[in-house]
Length: 188
Image (cartoon, rainbow, N blue to C red; front, side, top):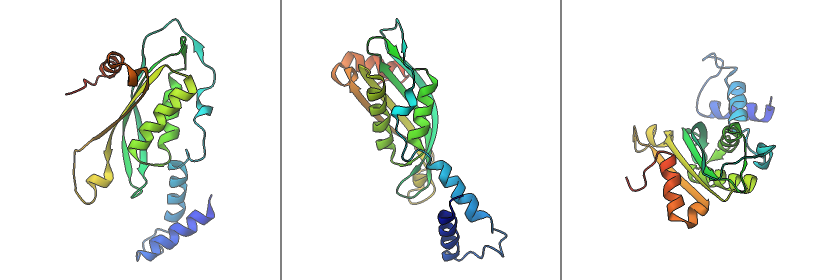
């Protein structure tokens, strides 16, 4: 247990005027510190470690993994944003990764204080670098609780970000094919 985090959480809650003993919340600082330790467990981890062994495939088409669930913490307010990520990539020379590696990648990158835009870019870079892919398209759709719980109270709003690299960035036909494969029709 991170005692420094527990102490800081205790101080924070008491600074807000909570009497932890009276409210039967004595264990709350430890629970919150442990939870944030898990939520930020992607800090300091290298995405290159996710890939492991690559496999030779006869596939020279686009490979896609759709609707990978994620949750992360907005770095501005430390409240959750959550949704799904879809990734399409064009293997270089038929070299592919196991599909489960993509869920591990999304989990690692999302378990950091984040911005959705940065997370999307980091995922695209990790696929390009880790697989030496010819191209990658990443689409993230999320609900931002900082928009729905405070300020604008924009309930039901979703945010969509994308990042593309390589052949998807340079070839409009490949770009459109990847968007369509992921179930997104560009321009709608």
